[in-house]
Length: 366
Image (cartoon, rainbow, N blue to C red):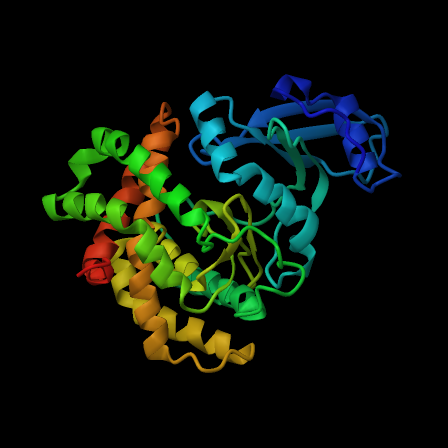
């Protein structure tokens, strides 16, 4: 795809730029766009970037072109953009859509145009709009059936690449478990923890505050222990705000692949159940959902991985679910009411799940 220049703000998403993007992205017969109206839809959801919906009108009123497209741009918040650059978040999502998306057995929006600048890490993605599918507010939490749909889908993804991480198209992709990566994760976590506790410390019971601090000193060893298990390709931010459901079928789609990479598949499962399912519902369906996950893995050909090992891995990686709310809580912009409320619910559910599952047992050195 030829570069058109990466828009710096939503005001640069003009009718002309969008028409050229759709044409250069592969739709050479894209009709002429007369007007584009841009609305921000990611406030409090797209915490690491801007998510915009562009409403398109055409000179030919009978045009078959898309009525709306989604555009993703970097965050305008300097600290957030720097965190994204340090962790390679923008590049990972760009690389996912360019290299991996059309190979995986889980739906994501079609990439209509993309560009990434290596030196600045500025990027733009123009994506299919999934507005015909239903989204669920993460604050409400997933229903049991929605949780099962999500876990079955991610199990198919994990099963496809289970212990095959050296094979295309994911060979050479970002490896969240690599030894070189672990000290960076520790540094970012430890730098984020004081600010996270300052902002959200009232949500931490004393034992959880102690565990969060101890985990910061033991991250490298914990990640090493997790990496010794099975590895696959994971979404990394597998939560309800990034999911779309069909009202009358098992159709399911996932967006926001900024944290995708090679990791433990059980992290997606633990992260979803701890962040996107209300504690009462999670406790009710937890073992049933893990059993379904394990069955789907086996149906894809995964062997030598018992349900007991699956359950143990789930509890082990649950301790690592500290990472996202602590780093986000210390580094990201929570100036909107929605983003702060989401962070508080996310953190409260995560702390509850870590406690429920006695995940402290997997703290290295115990």
